[in-house]
Amino acid sequence: MFKCKFFDLGSKFSHHVKIYTDESKDGMRTAAAVVAPNFVKTVCLPDNASIFTAEIHALNMALDIIRRTRSKILCRFLGLFVKLTSN
Image 1 (tube, rainbow, N blue to C red):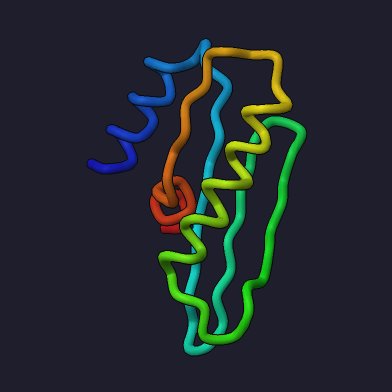
Image 2: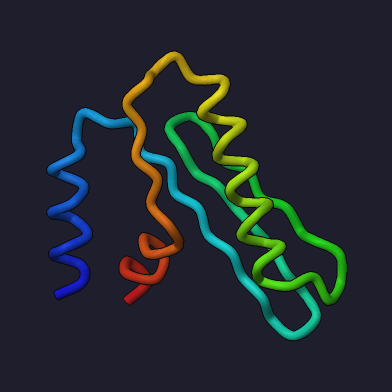
C-alpha cells in the first residue's frame, strides 16, 4: 500500500526534480545521504551523533543541491524511498 502511494506521489510530481534523503543510526555509528539526479553524497558522522544530527546533515546537503540547481520545481522525499523499495 505504501509503495503504491509513494509511486503515486512520484507520478503527481513527475515534473519536479526529486531529492531523496536518508539517515541511519546503528549503535554508535550515524550516517546521512542525499540522492538527486546526477548527484549522490553520503557522510559518516562522528561516533555517537544523534539521528537528529544526521537529519540536519541530510537537509543541509539537500539545500546545497537546491542552491546549485537551476530548477525551481523541487520535491524532497524523506528516507521513505529506501525503506519502501528494500522489500
